[in-house]
Length: 98
Image 1 (cartoon, helix red, strand yellow):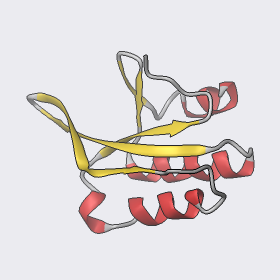
Image 2 (tube, helix red, strand yellow; image 1 turned 60 degrees about the vertical axis):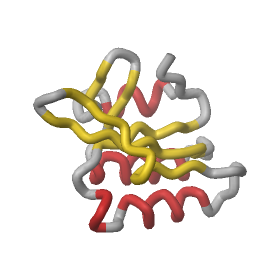
Image 3 (cartoon, one colour; image 1 turned 90 degrees about the vertical axis):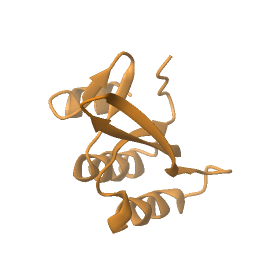
Image 4 (tube, one colour; image 1 turned 180 degrees about the vertical axis):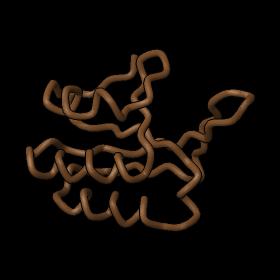
């Protein structure tokens, strides 16, 4: 987790203990997780507006297992046009927003 934190410290948006990423950065984080064998458990979507940060379950994705295909599934999910407006919290092995 320290490698990810160091690499993305200038691009992550921190809100309390949450790490939120724009799509491009989220895809890079997922690619690094794959390269470093860090399991991906899910993606939580958040919409940032003048009223605050609003979670969106409709644009979130969770995996039931720690399959190697989760990396490509996560990238494919983030590549959908309907998900472009959101920031993503990436749940990977060792991450906790609490």
